[in-house]
Image 1: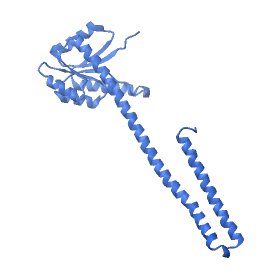
Image 2 (image 1 turned 180 degrees about the vertical axis):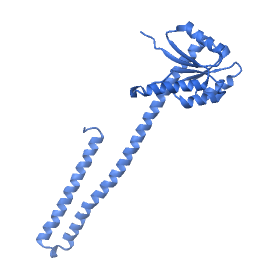
Image 3 (image 1 turned 60 degrees about the vertical axis):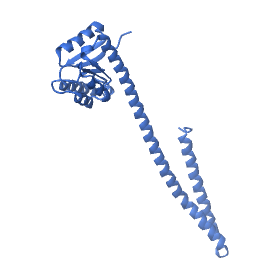
Image 4 (image 1 turned 90 degrees about the vertical axis):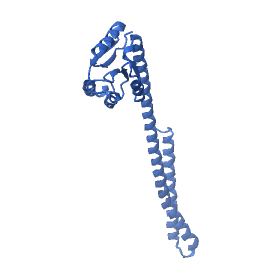
Length: 239
């Protein structure tokens, strides 16, 4: 079975640190890793944006990520500290990030975790085992977060749909109440005339009033049938 190639963007301005990391990958399994190295945050943002635009030309590929993971040094020539992570995540919020910190900068690493980084590594203590373990952990955690976001979006969409359905039901009830009022008024008024003025009403008028009552009843029956039809449709009995 072919192994999946993991695309890594290494953002590191120290040639020594970058060489150590790249050499570690080369010793592990060069066929599994595809590594791009840049030494400035602006270059990292530019390359991610450029590749995003390329994949964006194909609608079916819009959800593809440019890189699977980012190894990000917080102290670069054009950005320093936690702002480096914030600026990058503002452009690429969905790609897992492993922060690289100096030996005396673990506080920045912990702060980076609080800002959304998946993990952090102290550069002077990096071994290939720690690096690979951190990358795999970050990838797994990133996938879980993506699944959680997708689940959250599905839940929100379902809630919006439920809210729209409730609003539609409320409007429907108000409309039905209004529509029932007209035939009911016709029935009541016709019955009142027949009850209190029967002696003064001719047979032809009586027939007209009874005809109105019958028409109003038929109208109400038709509306009830439509309501029952909609009810069956709502629970999936009718296509």
